[in-house]
Image (cartoon, rainbow, N blue to C red; front, top):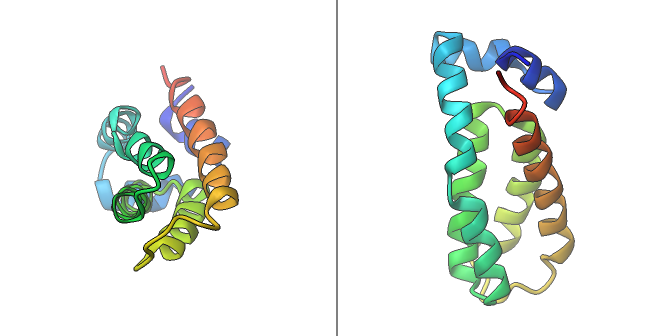
Length: 116
């Protein structure tokens, strides 16, 4: 699969990302680096530890990365979770939002792993 096909599979606008990053090689390079980004794992751990502040920072970072890379499918639920956690002292009410993030995170990583 090409990087363009990966973005198409995810329902993202490859050309929009390409206009920012200038070349397909750079889009591919940075998209594949996403697989090594620790933000999702940090988010998962912080939620398990009921650490709202750390969970917010991790969700916010994940949201920003998704925005920059054009992973719209993952940006939307991570933005919702970020806003739920903004200024929160508890993680109550985040289970459903995290489930949506996790689903799209897994789908994004699965598509990225198909890139040749």
